[in-house]
Length: 314
Image (cartoon, rainbow, N blue to C red; front, side):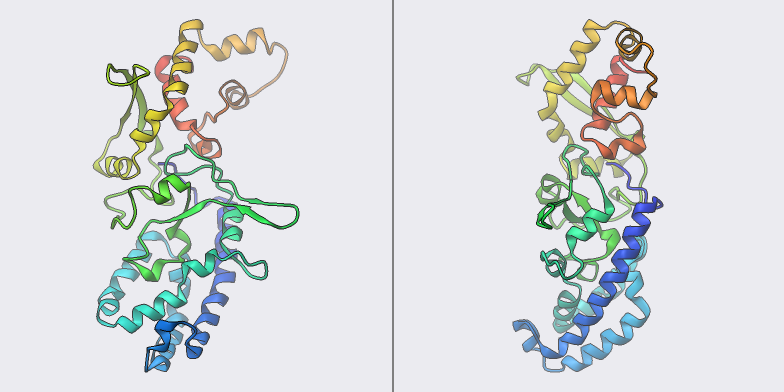
């Protein structure tokens, strides 16, 4: 699990753009409740009661719902859950107003999920750091691909948070459609990319095994139950067990270069060329050295941990 630093300028800008755009969208959808645009809304007799409820409620809580921090979001959702369970019509209205599918529609004329993904600029999945999560919009403005957005708090259990900025985690399809599903996770039990910065508490290792074709098996060490819960939820060990080829390459490198590989590379092949340690590492291994940069390239965390264990890097 990697950390997304919410204090980065690009994240702050993305948050502001999201609020400015989506607050207007929410108000427009509240106003549109009167037209009963869906089959479920047509069945609500006292729709104007809910319109008044939303208009009064939104005046105080819209900013919190859209860009509130995860702990505040959870409390807000829990506070309204009894009413949602008691009033079926309230849930129908909430699901229309805070509609994730509407955000995901590809529309050039308004803000959508592509705009959010592009402004965040998260290059790899923070859950697994295995897959790219690139946003690609062609020169012709065709919206080609973007990351999936995982709802940290499942929208089936927390419909109020379906389009909350800090509940939408840019992620790969594997992590978004895997075993997490509608599991009711909480900040006390599972890591949240915007909240927890514990990347160094989780360490990749390996062992030799007679139960695998490659003879190798990935191990993952963690320091807390919360970290272990998160690893199991996303099947991180199982995912990385498919990367024993990369593991074998690093072990071979250790066999052929008994001394520090980066020093050999710099003194023999790059003599006279100034290059920072970060740049040299990226050139040699194709991944990032520093934990705050892991999110820029897939497998950075995995490779850094294994290379350190093998003594290839300091």
